[in-house]
Amino acid sequence: MSMRLAVFAGCAGLMLAAPAFAGQTTSPLPAATTGGTWTGTGSMSTPRANVTATRLANGRVLVVGGNEVLTAELYDPPSGTWLPAGTLSELAGIHVAVRLADGRVLVAGGGWYSTRAELYDPATNSWTRTGNMNVGRISFTGTLLRDGRVLVVGGNSLGGVQASAELYDPTTGRWTLTGNLRTPRRDHTATLLPDGTVLVAGGAGTSGWPRNAELYVPSTGRWRSAGTMTTGREAATANLLGNGRVLLAGGGNPSAQASAELYDPATGRWTSTGSMTSFHPRGAAVLLSDGRVLVAGYSEGDVYSPATGTWTATRQMVDPGLYASAAALLPNGQVLYVGGRRDVYCGQYTCPEDTAQAELFMP
Image (cartoon, rainbow, N blue to C red; front, side, top):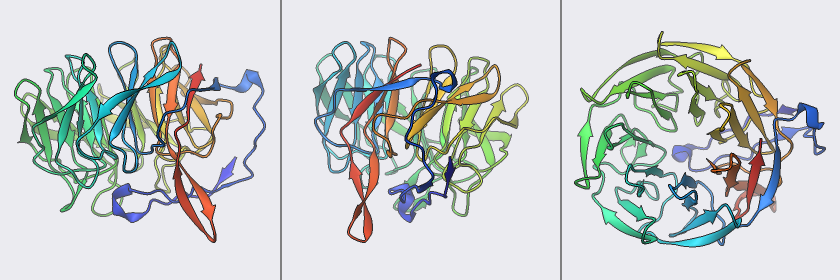
């Protein structure tokens, strides 16, 4: 499959220009060469893009976000249906959602550079406000630390690309600033490593796509170098593998796209690994139950095998052409892929169109 570059618009990654694909095939691949198949499931009540999908302790999936959407929804895997999940006090979108140790979900930032944070309680199916962040952010990351606190990092604010980071304490509901990144960045990745540190890599900086990666050390609240990536990656995916390495895949900038690389915490080095069979702009990634990684978006998915360092394409998705979707691993090993945006022609221009559709990946 050949393809032309999908270019990120300005405004902190709020919009992705239409990904153009030349010679795209619509026929399914032979079963022997596919990494899995897709099937439809129930649709949400509301079209949504730039969403988060958070699996709860009871196996349901909480979906938050969308264009001018205050409501949230729950996906129930046994029935394949959607249930209402209350109403947020402010708009979300390009926000973070983190499941806390007690099962509640923290949703923070997003919207129009909001500082607000809210908690979803599955026991009551309701939302409550908690303390505000110190900095309003979009396109940032949120990571649950071993001690139960949440680390948020970088992003874009009214003051530009951020180097700041802060910690949320669920016991007090308060946010405190912590050490700044060495390099301001947005649309980056953040991965909790087995030793409790957090790897932050990729993204877009004040000028270009930084290749330097950083490690946050919770015990000191400081950052240290985590080596140099093989290429900068804006809006890539990141997954911690069973062998302790971190897989970064894709990215919207020209040097990234379908390529992938590995970070080894034991050596602090980055090395290239096999490239995906196609580019998945603003793709969603999930670590599968068998240790492989699914990266999906636009027309199909790719499944990475850590044992071989290679990717296998899935069959075509039920609803192709989407980006800015979200994905979550279900208790039965299937993957829920939900929401997203496609660019459709409206006169002589292309216009973004959000979808309420959802589908399931079966490895």
